[in-house]
Length: 250
Ligand SMILES: [Fe+2]
Image (cartoon, rainbow, N blue to C red; front, side, top):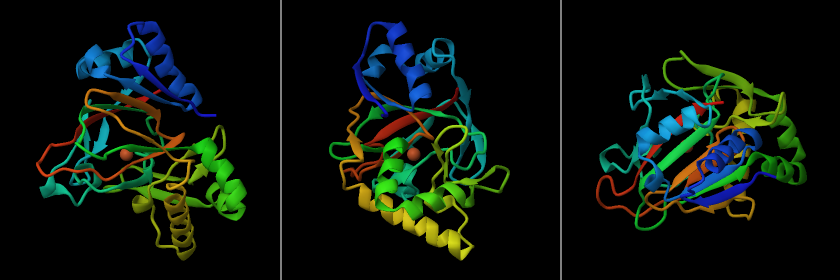
């Protein structure tokens, strides 16, 4: 099963590189407590590239939904921009970050620059566990998620992804963003609504784990082998919670 491993600022860099590479292989989740004490963001990028053999994917959509290129992207509480999850303090439902790319980056690497005083945990639902749960609870929904093609798209359509939401070959991967899946077909709308409702229900079960990253911690996970989200958090001033994110291809 997907491993959720916590390391506290290890001094063995070979071990650290191996554990990050394992996230790419087994779809695990790695919490690196006090990772910011080891490296600053620039050094983390160098380590991920040179020691872990990952390739930076700079593509991200800005607030105008245009592709911009950067090494690190800021996810920060900014009340004047809180209509988007990246800048709100609301709960963010389970999703993947790169589902709209047909050639998505696999590895998501977060540096928690500043955690809120309360809340802001990452919710994590490993795909392996989700498939088992769906197989028991709702095999018909699982079958549709594996067979019905949907189109996931953001921005002007330069990039889009036509895929089943759960794709089993060549290996199990999930591509899920409720809001960015085109739902003009009533059958696809029903499928998306049913899956969204299922995930909302599962989030209160033991299948979904919650990881509290503290200021200075890092989090690394496989974007297509776990769904992730965030709980609501307390913030009254801009930038009371701030994390930086980078995306990497295997
Ligand atoms: Fe995300």
